[in-house]
Length: 479
Image (spheres, rainbow, N blue to C red):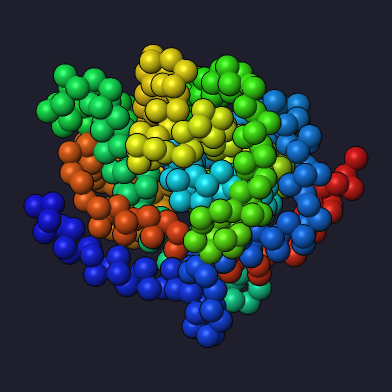
């Protein structure tokens, strides 16, 4: 079954690979030492543009963002479903996942310690992209008859571009985005998470080997108990679990760093020197820069547009306030957590990877070099990272499929909730099956759809950027 399903999706993977990872420089006849994929250029160029266009709001707005998150400006009269903190926790929980543990290890294995520097730079730039898309997510959100809220790129692409006279373009881009998100949620936000989480559990506790499907079923039941409550239920869980899992991981990483404090200066030198004068890295500085940027793009999802779906449900009067809150996501995800992972791997000397360990195994070995029981703490965070990612992406998928089919189902059956429930059931079944099936082509296909979401999303952001700039100006002027 696994081989037949993989074989079915392989042609789709190859097709998307040719588009998303097409090298425009090679097509122009410019010989560079490494391949530079179109999708990474697309994400990074967008991040640089918005950062300059909005005059480095990613740095200027940090203090105000923190004030908003702690509830300094919250009012019960504001329309919405969840608080600023819950929106931040839900959106960040969907990006802080196994990529922060395994992905950083892969980046350092491929690009050396210097990849960390470019990962941090990309994280800072991505903060402005998140500001832009989440501001628009709130501005163009839709308040439903039952009081719930729907929002995200599909709404600002459709309605925002319609205001600009681009009615057909907006509709097409919105449908493409929603379709990519609804299907893509099954991979990066579901199957991959459950598969890798269960694999780590059985690696840590070998006696559970053979019980993968039962672990997957338990996971699916727990996910189902949360997602049935919609965004309010998801937010209530995430605002408790996210601080816990982030706190455990950061404290564990800090412990490793403190124990090895005498090597901290050497670690920073390796990061700096490796960023500009890398040795043995294919493509030299361009190669290591690309590796760092690519990992950041996969990690914080800035430009993908997914976070705007969660942030659009926030209780606020001013759309810009949620833009400020959202810029904290790449900071937490990439600048803090990914950097912590990198420092643990570098400061313990595991970056040399003498045993050729892969992904999570390398990070786990770095923690284990301090204490044999540290990998058990790592397992706890892996379980929490995977769980919160799954429940957050279930919501993104639900809202996307509702945008595509909600009106049709409501007109035909009078019950819009049907499309949500059917999607959730499929999502839960895949959560359980993901624990035992290794459908590499399916996961690759889903991951590519997630990256592809950035194409229609950033097109819309470019067109609507002047609106964001004007809203920011007015907000700053307001006493």
